[in-house]
Length: 118
Image (cartoon, rainbow, N blue to C red; front, side):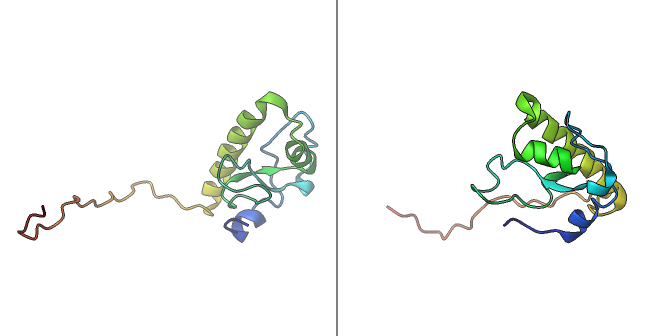
């Protein structure tokens, strides 16, 4: 099991489906947080971390779990994850600052002992 973030899972309650496959039932009462495709992020039979997913109704969740979304499945997921992240940021569940502080870097210089090895 990947990283569990209960606030993200709970945030799906009452949301509209972001997966919107052709089988979408548009029922907000059935929307849950659906874990996205592994794409090397987890092993077979394991779920990815909770931040990698999208809001999906029961029909879309079943469609993507059964890989019925066809050739557009990856694009469908990427679009849905982007839409879900926008909502998570707007809700304050994933905090972002407008002016991030610059990351301080240090050069990788190692002290010289004064002796040379042969």
